[in-house]
Length: 591
Image (tube, rainbow, N blue to C red):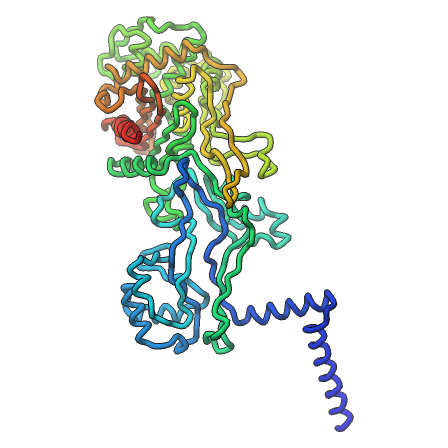
């Protein structure tokens, strides 16, 4: 027994010596192990809450925030029941938060990890008002602190499809961040950009890490008086980054409010700067909820860059193709009796337009005249002219070779659709296909972004500009990290003649002066444009896509605008045209 006890004592002494060595010895391996043990010991008694994820934010062209806002919020750390202090203070806090005391007490008791208080129906931490902050002075509750919280998507700022959203997407993390994942710098549970600029710039926006607060408790989950809280975060003056967009926040929000008030349930509005092609506003409906992407009445898809049947808007391309091929002239006369005579094609105006010139046909959107013109063309001629005008191909800003900050090519709107003219190149000449394509039906698809940019192209006498959504990216200290310069997007087939562009612009003036758009003549600015009504189906029920694209003011164009109202009942007034007029008046007032 004596020998056994002596041996156990020796082993115990060896353990003590080893522990002393790990804690005190200066050798690097032992020191690192000792530090690891100390960290583990601390981790057992600390609770951490993130104040700022460190993700970069967006601002508009004037520096106004589009995402990101810091405000005071109430953080609650989990403690054992009875360790929070006086019940009277808890009752006072409940009164300040406008919540029953028992409900607040139950919520605190249920916490397994630190959390910010959220009011009823709130999806982000509750913003404490100045009055609430004043009323909370003198209230002392264990594990309850008022902390600055940086919300990437604050409720006070409206979500925008062009910016996109962030979400958990393990499969995408595996595909894009394999190296970072294996090195432990990225976790499968991390949130990454899921759409829009959040997606295309995700690698830059991720930042240098979160800022967090740790709150220490003892072994019985009571507050450790004296240690209180510790702030940790990256010490990097360059991050998080700030992305400067070309959007105008106040104007964008005004357009959103206007289209909602005037019943645009599905569709899009794109506003481009007529001189530069920069995107001033890009509105999509239904709205997007960044807190619940599948919530009823919401849609995360950006309808502004999703292709839809254009209807008569495409007649601008058909006219350009015929003019470029020398197959028609602005003053050529056509006869419209309302019935084309084959392919089941009719004019929208019962009885027809009678004798009508090409310019008048564009103003009146005559199906007969444009079906006649389209049948003179070859399919390839239509396709080439569309390409010259930036139709049927991706048109948004991109850097195809190498965007230096990323070390790879960059496309700002990865979800942008190219659209099309034909499902497949016709093997032989098909008059019906040409006639229906010429009036913007059959297989033709374009996006509202392409439609607005088509107007910019015509205003620039056929020079195609890539619509830009970001102008520069800045470091946290304000220094410029990268500039995204304006770019053109020339077609491999060249460009249309300046006179062709001027002819189409005169036709758009006729649309508003005495054509299908004359209902929007009255307004602050004189405008020009082209209407369109495209036949489509939804769940077997006939519906129309209603369009209006144009520019204003006519004498000195400042903006190009495309409006799409999707899936409207047949026979209803063109809502897109009415919205176009109202948006132009908003633009005129926003000077």
